[in-house]
Length: 563
Figure 1: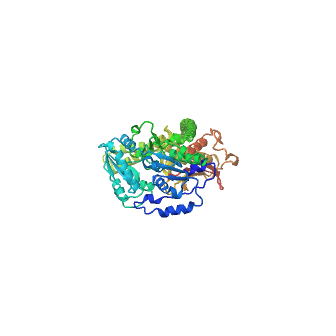
Figure 2: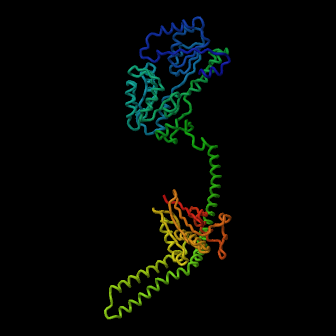
């Protein structure tokens, strides 16, 4: 009302407020001191209008009109029509009355919750509240036995809270008013209702709009907005010179039923039970209504990202296919390179096989001659058989190594012990080194070096580098013909070093030795080191070359160690 007056008045207003506290007490005591105070306050400067809010204030100003404001226009607002004292009204009075239709409130309860059997009535014990208890009982008499009424007006509010927390099924609470409880304790209505709402195990209904929102379910109720609008209209019309007797308003009835969406959800009340035309307030907006533009933007971003991701996945798939094909080509090229390398070792391999095979033949013939004798020496025959077994194992090992290098298998990554892999590769070329009068030495690392890789291809790298080193030593007329192989750990990498005592590599060729088709050999194709570099990089490693200060070349291969 104050906000409406300040916004709509054509004149500056000075609004004075006085609270009639005696209306809240069972034994209010004498009102004379308060009347004397108001009389002294306004005797020399009477107000232009007196505005009373509520029935107790209306009765007070009517009772003391002659002493306080005998000729002042009055607007009596928020007065229930049953409490309007028509006999004391004058031509200087305007009444803005309301009608509390309790039958409509209870019809609403039984419609919304048809299984309701009893209603706990929360009403205070002040004289005004006792008046309304009688009015409610009288008005609800037509309900008969449809629903039972449980009255809490003779209880202290603490006891009301305890009982409200343990209500039987099919019971609801009706909130009337709680100004003063039966123990004489004064309460602020909204605070008391919030306390009740916090503990109640049943829904709360009320006809009073000020308590609607976060506490009561709702239904038909007073129209505070309409009451305030008419009150402001009456004041402005009187201040504008209109006679109060000419300003008449119909009694304000309950408005369209309204319901709190959160309370409906809390008590599982179906919206289909609500009267036609009901308004549901405080409904949580859906995600779409609250964030429509943000969701549209996110959807657009997702669509763009989906397109980009689809394109990237397609490119990734193409790249994976290309990598698979590349690995297959690498495996085929490496296989051809291994055949070439083994071709260079053919004479040596044949020699290495002939030796154990020749020994086997000689030992076999010797054993046959000894067995033809009258008394063969069995211990010597046993030694001959042991020699045959040893030579057979030696030949088998040569063939096994040769087959492992020449077998055509796909690129296969698995855990390897690098020292053993290098040692097996050296076993293939040891006889070649002996035949060429080259000292081939191997110094393995003192600890195991576990890496991930393809053992055949890593052996191929070692074979290529050793064969190149032996060619460098053999082509030069060197007095010292050495090739050394060593493995070691360098930080988090395993290192293979292959050094020779040859003439080294021309400084201008160091940067090109790993390029395809680059070679310094008259009969070479220039693919061995290029394939070796490709294999090492496929194992996430590196390969390099440098000339040693004392002569010869040093190739270094580094591979990641498995943590």
